[in-house]
Length: 279
Ligand code: C2E
Ligand code: CA
Ligand code: CA
Ligand code: CA
Image (cartoon, rainbow, N blue to C red):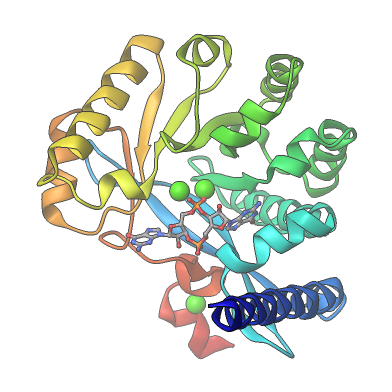
């Protein structure tokens, strides 16, 4: 038994080392990713629940590492957060997304809204609001057409001045969405005080609609809460016609998911095939 215990411990330690080594390799690769230009934003359409028209896009970060290959955001974002690298990487995301919005703004009046993910560390960072203002002015983007997605857990960790910080962002003109709604521990009292336009129902609650009674209850409750608070709801991860009709029948404002389009590079998401021929 003692021997088995030692083996289990040895196994555990090897696993820990492997995990630590992997994290270390990833953070050193991440450290060079910006200068090597290894990031790209992909854009996923968001459609109106009422008529299916595209009303916006969410910008989603992609990393093609020279040493590790393609690494999914669910793996590298936590490492970027833990090492603080999310600050320069997040700045690159903002810069790139603002430039995209500025191009739309030049092109026409009725431009889609562009949603950008903000990490907890970024949002809490001292100079965040000033940085946003500086990048916005540099790019010439329209803040009214930019939505900042802040996770429920980022807001809950945030401490006392969160409401004030959100209000500063609203005054600049950004719209705000609460991301991953339902996965954290939002106090409803808080929610009332947050100057937020949209709640994003997490994909985990959409996946088993309309068969799972619990998920139906969560979707229904989110929609009615949002209505009472004067907010809109975005449902993410909509993959089936049955999910779509369940959500639209209950007045869900915006839908996002593979049913409408996958995240795509800008040249694929926004341009017809005609340009490719010209390039
Ligand atoms: P999220 O903000 O909840 O983004 C939605 C995720 O669901 C994206 O995963 C998207 O590709 C995926 N998705 C959308 N529709 C469907 C669908 O119909 N079916 C399925 N199975 N999946 C769908 P992705 O792109 O892998 O991103 C994962 C997470 O990484 C994001 O979750 C977000 O938390 C984070 N992330 C991505 N880009 C950024 C970024 O620029 N900055 C920060 N801080 N985090 C980011
Ligand atoms: Ca998001
Ligand atoms: Ca989510
Ligand atoms: Ca094209």
